[in-house]
Image (cartoon, rainbow, N blue to C red; front, side, top):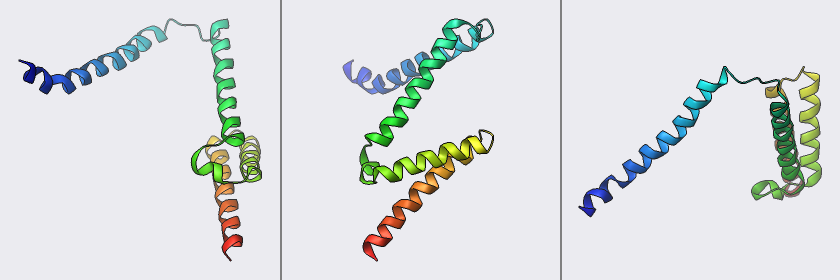
Length: 118
C-alpha cells in the first residue's frame, strides 16, 4: 500500500500545486470585473509596488550579488542613469530603456576588461 502512495506522491503534489495556482487565478478572473481599480486601497497597493521595485533596483545598484558585484559602482550607476534617461526621452519605451542600460553596462564592463588585459 505504501509503495502505491509513494509512486503517486509526485503526481498528487503536482495536482495540488496546479489546483492552488489556477484556483487563485480563476478567482482573480471572476472578481476582476467587480473591483474598482481607482479605490484608495488600489492606489496604496500601487504605491507599495513602486516602492518595492525602487528598493530592489537600488539594492541591485548599491549592494549587488553574484557577477554584478564584480562591476564597479560607477558602471552600475552610469548604466542605470542612461537607462532612465533613454526611458524618459523615448516616451517611456521600456524596451529601449532596459536595452540601453544593459548595453551600457556590458560595454563598460568589456571596456574595463579590455584595458586591464590589453
